[in-house]
Length: 246
View (cartoon, rainbow, N blue to C red):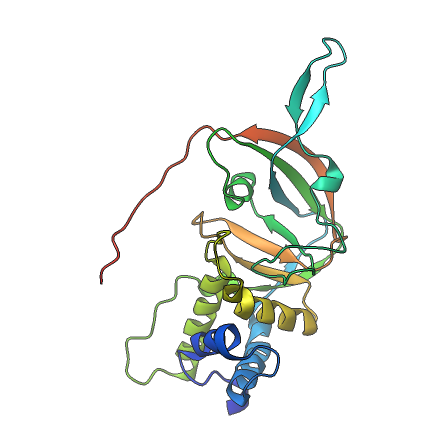
């Protein structure tokens, strides 16, 4: 691996993120282009294959109405299958996808999928279980999620690589709110596009809402089929707070 295939320093991702969010996005600086080259060279160590038949979960706020044929009353049921997958020609801004370019967001468990859509107490959540229809290669960014900053003054290239990839995963998994500035998505969207250009079918990253749950974003909307679905209502929620030290 040449110097151009290595990360310049432990702040490489943060410098790249600031540039594409605040300065320039489409015509990037040589430093940012070198960062992306390093990502391309080192992401091969994070290849993960999702096998045909593996199942994942996808949730959407809300429900459909199901008519009781006997009593004639309406009861909540899960969204129709067409509602549980994105439309092919439109999409709102996401951590992985820019506006207008859809992708499939999944979770590795039903509870994580429901938590990721940020439901409120009393709301209904439709959840679908999906089966992968072909082998898929994803860039697994979650491998070093908890890796801490090197404590030595001059860390090795290996330690720098580990910390940069940990920073990348934390950026993917950072909780999203509707009030987020969409420029905050820029760095992860560019990285996802680069993974796609490298031949990957998607990205896997740690869920911020579960210590053992992960999220998967897949680029091909037709690479998974819905197996079944159900509707849930939110009964309770738990929050934990930590003071920010200034």
